[in-house]
Image (cartoon, rainbow, N blue to C red):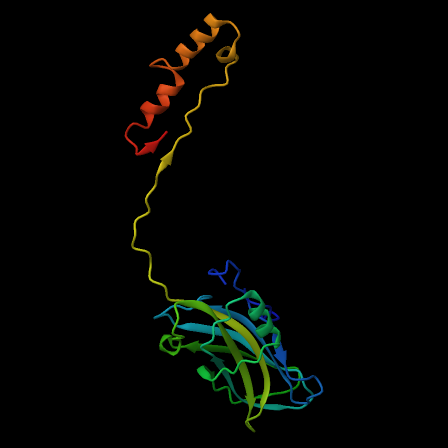
Amino acid sequence: MALPLAAFALSTLGLEVSPAAALPTQPEDPRALAITLDAVTPAVAQPGESITVTGAVRNVGTDVVMLDSVDVSMANVGLDTVERIEEWSVGAEAISTPITLGTDNTNAELAPGNSLDLSITIDPDQINPGFNFGTLPLRISASNQSGATSGQMRTVLPWYDAEPADEPVQVSWVVPLTVPAEPELLSGDVDTRTQAWLDTLADDGPTRSWVSALSDEDATF
């Protein structure tokens, strides 16, 4: 079932990826179309992987619309902050999306209130923004047979093309060397205090047990 479009947020920014806000034509347009997005699969674009955009287009006007096609387009622009993602999603940032990624040549007649499911597959060679990772502006536009855009929506497409790290992770141990909080260690009686420290530092005592257990590790005490 198609969901209303909500804002996407990115990994490399630590944000959850979700659909963005729809921008339908003004309701007074008798041939207005509204587009909803079901999914972008996979959610993050990578080199060599096809992208499938699924959703629906619905006639929210009062006239029959001869739907010609639905296009998915983008721009090689990185939306590098949460604010820019939000501004693009709600239409506050004007970015041209001249790169057409895919088209659904629907060529269908839509009566008022009727909807049509969409599925557009994007060839992996179509996406090559020129940087390793970022959030790309994505636009889905529906055109009638007169060539006019009757409805559109905005979303974003996270992109990741970074090389995997080939450096092994090195782990160092820093061990705080402590002794049990035994009251005898701080006793005012010299003999009691001396015996408590001898027991603590004995070969089978807790301090030497730590050192012995980590003797095979590069540990710093």
